[in-house]
Image 1: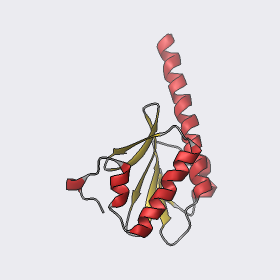
Image 2: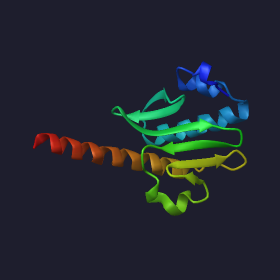
Image 3: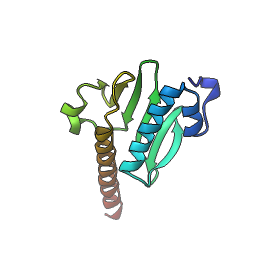
Image 4: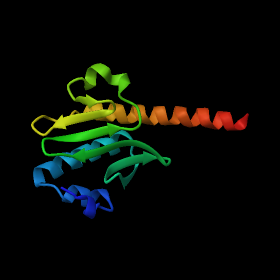
Length: 131
């Protein structure tokens, strides 16, 4: 696992720091995000993989000993209350245990929702600037 003194510069380096089985899960999650929104940009933020669109953060993920953390930022999960119940561990935080299949369909729906949420927020901001 990466330490604070060895923060990776890109997602490939982040993923490479984990055992092969965790690497495979992280790559699968990464591909699910990219499949949902192909034009997302990847970066490292707060020491973990993050996906942005038009400069706005959509989701983050990180690997832990027993799970993968998935963070729809800043909101995005209330819309999916029932679907996320088995994975929820706090406001805006989901945990996908390593001994369970990744809920890739749910991940895709959340990422697409975050895009809509981000776009709506941008429209409100731009509308306020015109007045």
